[in-house]
Amino acid sequence: MIDRALQKELLQKLKDCYVKGSGLTLKELETSQDAEKVQFNLKYLKGHGLIKSYSFGHMPIIRFQGMPKQQDTRKPEDAPISGEITVQGIDFLENDGGLTAILGVVTIKFHQDTLSELETMIQLDKTLPPEEKVTLLQKLRSLPEEGAKTLVQELVKAGLQKAPDGWNTAIHYLNNIPWGQTSVG
Image (cartoon, rainbow, N blue to C red; front, side, top):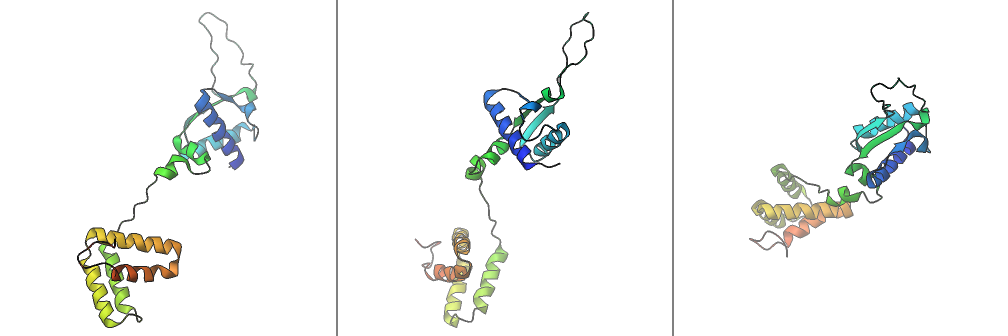
């Protein structure tokens, strides 16, 4: 029952309705006019937070007091579809991820265990002379929070660019920090 093409069309049409303030009917859909399938996919989109609310096929007949009860002569394809697309739904449609991608900040938490792991790596490194290990360990242990944060940023940056060079970047960074400073610079 999941139909990605139908979901995309529903989101696009609801986005258009969002802008124009207009409505939509089942017969306006090109992908599918299967009412059960449309209902299922609307519920799915709502479950993922891409639409806030929706209503499908609910269009009461208005009658005034004293008027005889009228038979509903509407055709199934005239069933109204209403819904409100969310900003996440709009961003989902955008090729660049919209403002969600631009404003989304990734927070990396840095724990003392990570520093301990770096200490172990320095101690176990067979390519470093013992006196350089001592100096690196002293610098690493004396780094203030801001310096440790900068070191982690450099490691992440290097790791994302070239995984094998990440360790060399950490050694280079620590070697180039003057005593008492938090970062190279």
